[in-house]
Each structure stands twice: as structure tokens, then as C-alpha cells.
Image (cartoon, rainbow, N blue to C red; front, side, top):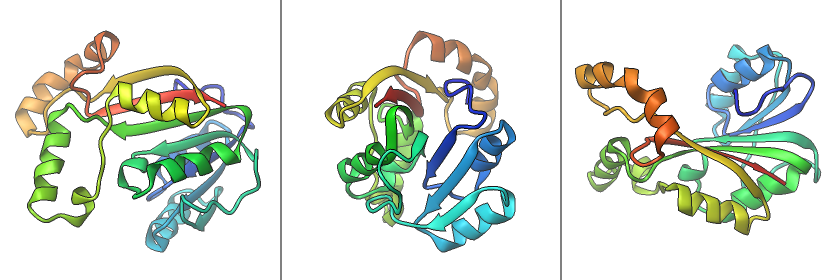
Length: 193
């Protein structure tokens, strides 16, 4: 959120809005929010959480919006789950106005969290079997290929996904995010069209 400020009165599209947690926060700071998700149950959950938002069940590969409609497009841990990342990213760029901001939150390739999810995929989880993970270099290259200018990539969630150890090491997370992106479970890229 701090990388996107100010958001008041800006038209924001949340791709893969899920249960609406991010949409509710965006609306709270005055953004004009639109959310889409491929799962109608998620759209219903988002509608209950953020009734002020405009929501629809839609596919990230075929967005039901005109070109240059949004000031900001947010894709929070959604491209890692889309089969055709390039096409989904092209659609996000298409609906973004010139000078607009694309914010992508993705699962970091070189983290314990990614390792756990990869193992789940190997053990049969269809969600994680089909997922993809990125590192700062591959994410930057992907955004540049899409015609965007990358402003910043930041990492978060350096702590391990295990109870007591996570609680103990989470206190160092902000410091680690200022120093490196290596080992971050979550990467945020901010780019302009």
C-alpha cells in the first residue's frame, strides 16, 4: 500500500481479488476499486467484505474493460497461478492508462515458502503443481518485455513458514527487506506504463 500512495480518487483494478481483503483496504484509503476473480465464490466473499467495490467474475486473460481504463492495476499473488503469465500481464498492461502503475505481488522463487509449495505440488496439489515462482531478475525481465518501466522491487516475509521459528525471526523482516530480496517469500514490483 505504501508503494502505491496516494490512492484517493484513483481507479484501481485488483486482478484475482480473492475474498476482497485488499479491495477493502484500497477502498478505505479512497480508491475507486474494481475487482475481478475467476472464482464466483471468491467474488461473493469479496462482495460481502467490500460492498463499495465493483466486482465481477472474470478471467485475467480476457479482461472485460476498455483499454487505458485504470490508474493502478494490482495483481497480488495471481500471476503465479495463471497458466499464461505473459497473456495475463499483457491484459493488465492493456487496461492500464499511460503513466499508470502496475503493482505485482508474487511468490519468491528462493524462499522456504516456495520450497514448501513446490513439495506440495510434487505430492499432488494441483494448485501448486501448476504454479510458477519468480525472482527479481525474472520478474523485471517479464515487466520490461511487457513494455513497462520497473521502479522498484522489494522483498518481504523472510521468516520461515514454521510456528515458533517464524514468530522469533519475523521481527527482522523489515530490516531484511531493506537489505536484500534473496530469500523473500513475497516480492512486490512497482512498474509504470
